[in-house]
Amino acid sequence: MATLGELAVVMGLVATVTATALPQLQAGLDDARVAGAARYLSSRLAESRMAAIARSRQVALRFSVTNGKYSYAVYVDGNGNGVLTSDIQRGVDRLVRGPEKLSDNFRNVDFGTQPGLPAIDSGAAAPGSDPIRLGAGNSVSFSALGSATSGTIYLTGPSRAQYAVRVVGVTGKIRVYRYNRRSGKWIPM
Image 1: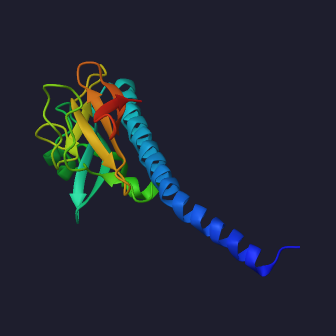
Image 2: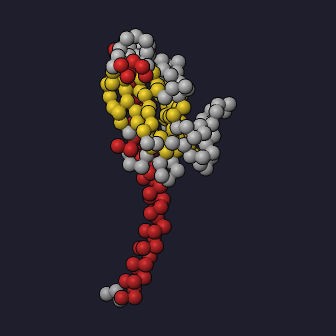
Image 3: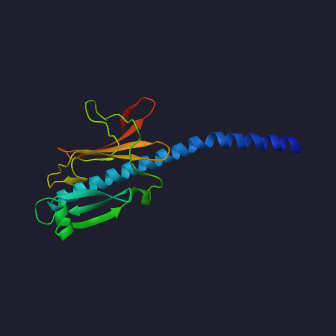
C-alpha cells in the first residue's frame, strides 16, 4: 500500500510530465488543423476547377475581407466575360457556394503569414503580410479548359504552423506546401 508521501511524489511526476508534454501536443494539434484547412481549401479550388470544366464557363473562388477576417465564395460567370465584381453586384455572375470562413470548420486557423517567411520558389517574391497573393484581384478564376489564375494563398495557426496553397495558372494544378522552420524551406505535401 502506498504512503501519502509516495502518492504525492507520483502526482508531482504526473503533473510535471503533463506540463512538459502539453505545449508540444497543442502545437501538433494546431499544425494538424492548419494542414487540414490547407487540404480543405485545396479541395474547394479543385471543385471550382471541375465546375468550370463541367459547365463550360468560368468559375471563380473569390476572397473578401470583413472586419479583418477573410471569407471566400464561389461564383459562376453568367455572360461569358469572366467573373467580374460589377457582374456579381448586378446579379449576372451568380453565387453558387459560400461565403465561408476557414475558422467555421478549423478552429483558430485563418489566412495569414508569419513574419519573415521566404518565397516558395527561388527568385519569387516573399509573401510579406498579404496572405492572398493572386495578382491584382483576390480571386482564382478557372476557365472551361481548366487553366486558372496563378497565385498562392497562405494559412496559419496559433502555434506558428504555416501552409500555402498554390495554383499553377497554365495547368490549373493545385499544390499544398508546409513551411519547415528547422530547414527554413517550403516542403510540398
